[in-house]
Image (spheres, rainbow, N blue to C red):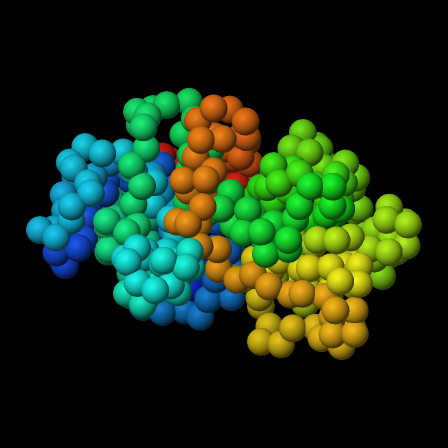
Length: 344
């Protein structure tokens, strides 16, 4: 089968690899009908050390179940399923707590250990606990929005939950990528009264306003902090969704939170240390978040998509075939595209 391999920074190729097969009795093999490129894929695209073997990329997918192991009970051949970016058994203590990304038998797709989903097919470990059957056909018009349940919509929602977004509160979203834009949807959905987007790309700003952003701050650093305070009577916001992961974005997130506020971090941190620990401490700011347990949120978010109350699929602004994936990476890295969908 064909798949996307990354051999080093900027080196993405489409090559033939062995077909996905059932290895463990808890596995399923899914024929991929939709996949996508994630903003987090751009970090290795910029920095990955060169290797001779390459890494099969991709951790977001919708597809059709083609085969499964003897221990799989909840799936049948032909089911259309959404695949969260992390696999989990659904039965361990952390899964029961809604923290599927810490599953004791879990892991992540698109790593050196588990082949990714920017491919014609993918092996899904712990299939019963991971995959969610979708009540639509594989060519349904809602496919883009349903695909966001594999990562970006659930991640934006996790940022909002971690930041304690609630009705009537003021919210800032740091980052105008797909996760940040879905964070705007999540904040609006949870009842935020004022939503400030920190971003500077006109197409993304327009989409954020459609999603519910009430104000936009395009400055950075100290100027951004000052602008946010102007919107909030000098106090800062109740909740900050940090959707980037760089030192500057994390620092800004803490500095724009009001005393007693909360920061939800979902941008993959690019540094080992978190800035502004003293301001966070002295202002009693809660800092939470991490890899989003999107599997825990699918049942909650799915009805809103099926009934048209939210449209997170609008973050996709380019559809490509598998052979075009290398250019899809380039387009996202050059900010020519917000998020690229792949139809193998």
